[in-house]
Length: 241
Image 1 (spheres, rainbow, N blue to C red):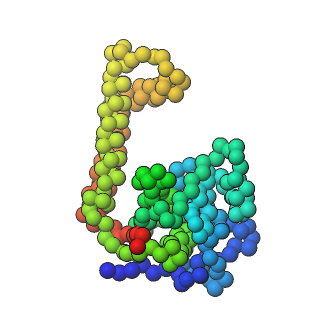
Image 2 (cartoon, rainbow, N blue to C red):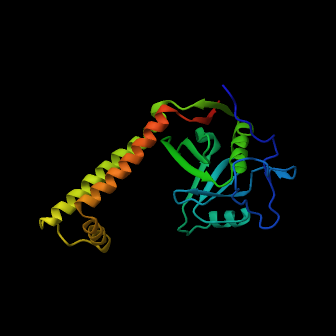
Image 3 (tube, rainbow, N blue to C red):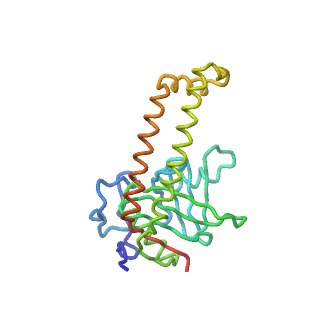
C-alpha cells in the first residue's frame, strides 16, 4: 500500500510576511513550500466549513471559529469573550478517533468524541494543498496518529451521494405535491414570507418544471454514484494508535 508523502518534519509552511495570513494556492503541488518554514501550531488558518472560517491549533486541541482572523492574538481575544454570537468549537487531540481526506480534495473529515463521549464529526476544507498536507503531517508526526493510504470501499465512497439522492427525490415529490395541490385550490396561502415566496417560485416552475429539475438533479447524482462506485478514490486516513 502506497503512502502519501508530506513535507519534512518542522518544515510545514512558508511565512507570508505581507499579511501574516496564508493565501489560497493556485495549484495542488507543494512547490511553494521553501526553506523558510515554520510549525503549524499557534497560527491562524483560513478554512471553509459549516459556520466556521478560521482554525487555530496548538499542542492540546483544534479550535474553530466563525470569525475571520489574521493573527492568533485576535483569535484568542475573540475566543475568550464571554458574550459573543460567534460559533466556537474546540476538539481536543485526545478525543479524535480518525482524520480522513480523499485524494484530489482538500476537505478534512474528523471523527471525535464529545465531552459526554458521544461520537461526532467535523468537516472543513483548506484552500491550499500545502497547508492541508502540513496539517496532516503535524497530526501524524506530532500527535502520533497512524497513517494509511487506502482505496475507499465502494459503499463508503457513495454513501453520502445516496443520501443526497434520497433527499432530492423526497424534495421533488414534496414540491410537485404542493404545486398540484395549490393548482386545485387546496394549499393555504398563509404562512410567513419565506413560505409564500417558496410557493410562488414553485408555481412559476409548474408541475413539469419541478419534475424536470428534480429528474435532472437525480440524474447527475446517479452519475456521480456510478462513477465513484466503479472506481473508488484513494484516501489518507489517520487513526489513533
